[in-house]
Image 1 (tube, rainbow, N blue to C red):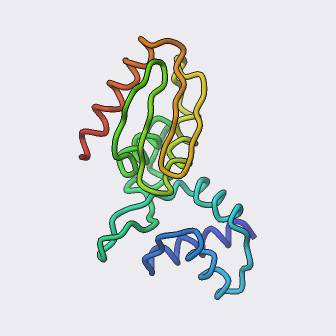
Image 2 (cartoon, one colour):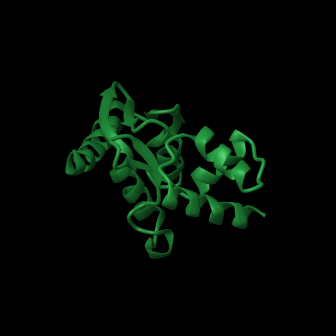
Length: 155
């Protein structure tokens, strides 16, 4: 059931400009699948969907430029999602703040949590903001510089 649902989600976001989980939930219902927002959120996270700029100038769900089959490691998957989702990186003492496109913080955070950064204590994601707690201020500065350099590649 889950694989079929995720296959349908992929088709829906490929065929239509879906900008919210609510829109996706309505489309799934049209296809006979009555799912909760929590299920959709988990699917988006598992499928590593990203928000990209649509032809109408609004953000929509999309599939990362590199498909999962082509990505060899969690680091590469993180990089792919990071580059497509992050708008800005900031720092406050030993906390690195990552601003993303609306709705993408959890996807970025999920991949960040699976990437080996020994200096990273933990993360907390909202809708468009991630707090990454580092062990020391120096760790945060180093982490910030790395992420900021990545973010500047896109912006």
